[in-house]
Length: 168
Image (cartoon, rainbow, N blue to C red):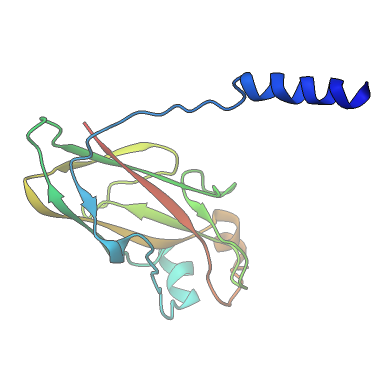
């Protein structure tokens, strides 16, 4: 009797939908170049006395190449949203993921020096048909207390960021 009940429940479960699918079909105007899907930026050697003196390092360029851009649907404005662990001392900048260095965060900015804060849709400009290069800068910023107290910790610098490109 218990076996018949189990078979009846199993048959009923097989007839009842228990998996649902959803999504949205979209036409993306561009493709990201395969080599740009995972990027690594090496700050090389940054001297702490420069951080104490200026509060930040010079920017290091990052370029993302967009391929096969098709703007026939009229979406020509591009923006980027960066995600990562935010710095408590420097909101909008990226917290270091350990590695040794401390008292620092990583900032992102346009080539003209405009801030590109985390978790914000940041406009980058206009795309055209074909290939487009999206360029911005990354820099090291000293946390105010670490700069004032001269307690920036030396060592390797590690952090990670995600990015999402938006087309309007």
